[in-house]
Amino acid sequence: MISLPPDRCGLVETARVVRYLALESAGQCGPCLNGLPRIAAAFVELATGRPRPTTIEDLQRWAGLVTGRGACHHPDGTARFVRSALITFAPEADRHARGRCSATNTAPFLPIPAAAAAQTEADWT
Image (tube, rainbow, N blue to C red; front, side):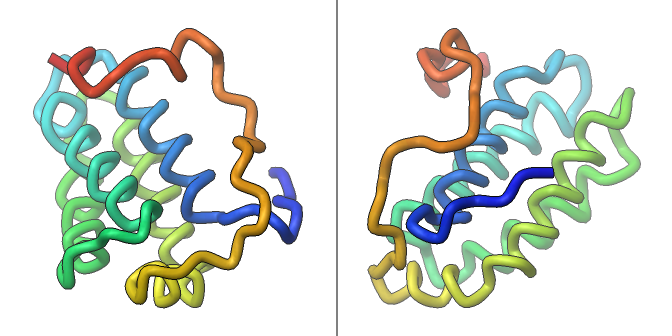
């Protein structure tokens, strides 16, 4: 457990972690091969202030679809993390839907391995 400083955006940090989790999956089953990358991309959409009107609903639905369907529990943990973030950062998600963010410091805070930070979505294929 870690507490974010008040000048950071929980949605942006969550998007970074969910992207990392999607890139770290084995890609051996449907939830990891298709579900986690789509969830990560949608969370980035939400975090960057360009969400579609259905982004949050899509994230909730997709988190439910991957839960309990993977060859391991990696997708389950990722889905729980996403659901928790949507609840915890709901006021920030509302700001982002209006194109705003409460963060005053945009530097990454949570430690994501450097190699993962350099990967791109093309690495999912």
